[in-house]
Image (cartoon, rainbow, N blue to C red; front, side, top):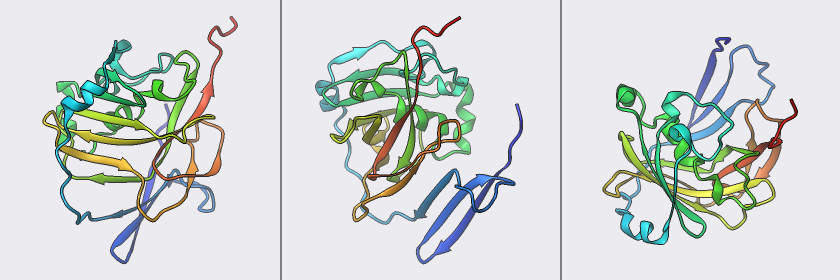
Length: 231
């Protein structure tokens, strides 16, 4: 493959910083890959999550697809993405258990949020989405409305995913809490107070979409493949 350089621009504004990420050499007038605001969190510590109560509400235990990479069988992910160990479904919610392969444990010395763990933790329960077909559909996240980081991600985590009622027609909206095995929340992804809309952008691998979508974790369906492609 081709090596590409990523340029990360950080501009401090008051008590926050705006972060922009784009490919080196891109026209500055082109759409960036990522735009976000970052600031220090000074709120209260989150309450401990009752994992047993979530398990009781999610009685449907499904087998994990090959490699443990989530609901999509026709995409080949790297070995770090093979971290999904178990998933349970309830009514409009799911609980995932994830564990990074111990041989990749040194990664956690460099990442507060491991990218492959975060990817599967937020996108590994697409069966919650109305009319989702695991043989043909492929959703990718386009907006993280607000991500609050309380602690470093451990080797083994649980992800509690709640589908929001406005999901459908190719878009999915979630509230998500990542926690350790004792229910202590390390990250929460949800709707920020006082914000109404974001400009949602999909990755360059999909058709360019510019649409105002509500804050929260948003996944947009970027591919619907034929179940039996022609030879």
